[in-house]
Length: 500
Image 1 (spheres, helix red, strand yellow):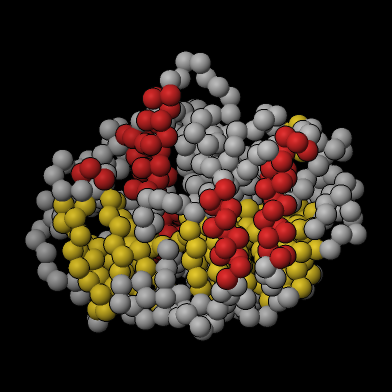
Image 2 (cartoon, helix red, strand yellow):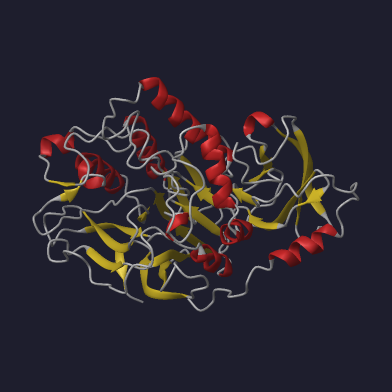
């Protein structure tokens, strides 16, 4: 994919160029409130969400970012150029104390399939300028789409170099598939250390997001493109599912758990460029080129009847469980049946294809623990004649490329879809150079594996989807280069992985 731009996004240059043409402001009486950066997300053909959160003291222990209790007015601007010589949209929004002084602006009246720049002004300061874009108009395919996706960025396990390399690729769209933060307490001796104890209260979660968003590499990735985000478990607690924990904690009352869960999802919304707080599963149409179906596989799944980890569970157990809940499953199948675009991309959190070890056991924290649910969805897209179903996955901290089969027990079964699994940004540290597919003999549909950290970069056209698995040799040291470990092509109308 040599046509990707390698030019680094020059953040300081954009900020300086924009400042020269911003209307005059009084001398700032407080430190710059834009320490957590700016972001855009959930693009439509005529609008996009613009986000920021004011925090002149981002790491203040109370999670308030050094902001007063008063609400604050924030100006915003959108332009077709990074000089902001001509504005196409502008306004003022209130950053409310009750919302952690975060703002979510739906900038409307924009042209389809177009690039824009945006920025904010508050408390006498002007933010950096970010780049965003809109989706193609309904009924049109628009330009080819460069899309990258990532997951699992544990700050304690390494530097967020993968985000910086992703920004340098200048994608048009970025998907984050969960574990944007990690909730655990600080553990000295690691590459970096979380501030504070395990996140439980709203103040805890706000502080943790502030620590993560203070990272310059993460901020750079938000500046180059709009994001589509969905949470996984660590945005709340490790291995959380449904309304309770996998492992029952007798000391935890229902009220205390509900309060923590509410605080976690509230903080997630406050810190993400989302159109609304609920539901987190949603559909984003990219003209006739692609439709992104973003799933929530944590809040609606049944608790696992045979426990977490690698287990052998009976078919009756698997048939009784749902990964998405009935309403979300029906919503997904209905959207797939519409066949809005050439590519139907399902962005979700956990391993989708069958993955058994040599003893025939499966990880029950994946779709293997919900086999009937997976079978209904796969059969659903077959029955609806979905031309190009592609499942995107995070969570497992390693990279995989998988053919999806009508019958995983039959090695000759027809390939009916494709799964691309990104590795982690940092979680589990550097990893190793191995690319040997684990348990390949029992899982012939698993085609690629890598234990390096990184992300996946794709180019989506009307005739094919090309995926580059990008890996870094190290995340425990700063500045590693990203290299393509493996590339695959999915051809229009031909599910499954091809080697270019």
